Image (cartoon, rainbow, N blue to C red; front, side, top):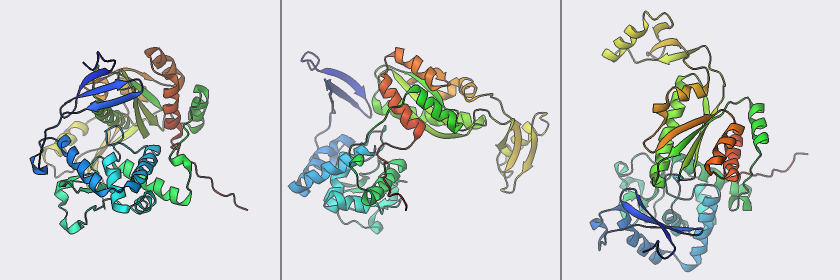
Length: 383
């Protein structure tokens, strides 16, 4: 029925089925939930939403609504607004809780600037002695949900998002600027990006993937993170040093993983760390494998008590390492199409696939230069 009325409706799956509806530039998710009269009767995470709404309406003052909007815009500007896996940041509900706790945007930022993981923020006065850490696991930020104290309202916040928020808060208090709310993204040209890479001596490689049809964004981004870690492990095993990894996708057909490699060629040999001798069969298997190897040096017991050998490298380049381990650097919904050895090659190959050149250059600019667009401190020149 929605499709007949001009809306584009897609059935997607996460922890349970839901419908994504889009119209022009607008998009919304319709997520089914069970009705519960008591928080203890909920069956899915979505069932908490009416309780969250009721709590916020009863606690948030009218004049604080703009404070919530400011906090959301600030977090969005620095790239940590949103609890979805792609962002792993602050949800809208968490922003509302922070304003309920601290009263204003400025007070929230002042508090955020002093956070240290693991940070406990209690909305309803719960102290650390009353918190059962087993409920929340290892988390940089713990905000017991006042509606359901068994849940951490900040569970989605990753350590990277947490530290980014702390850094931005510190800098905003000393160097306030509109750039935190309205960051100016730049897109450098192919030549400018290539020259910057060449000047730094780095050897980035970009893996391009075909995305399976109909994959939900949260599923896709979770898989891209896992594949990114696999790529890093493969390169490290091959003797290459990866200093950064980033992913991009149009969430429909194409995904890319940018691997910033510091050395274009691996050394002739690499050290291979084995088990501790007390680890029974594993240590003996390690000895038997390398003790008579004509290409290895060792094995020996290091100062840390572990077994070591020196092995020759297997791959001549980062691309060779990835392509030789294709099955390891793919996922269920993302299949490797090719690996680009330069930015020019990447742009030439992905644009015909229907990817926006401008969007790709924005992403590559941030991947190559690293510094986020909101980090534009104007320091006074020394005399």
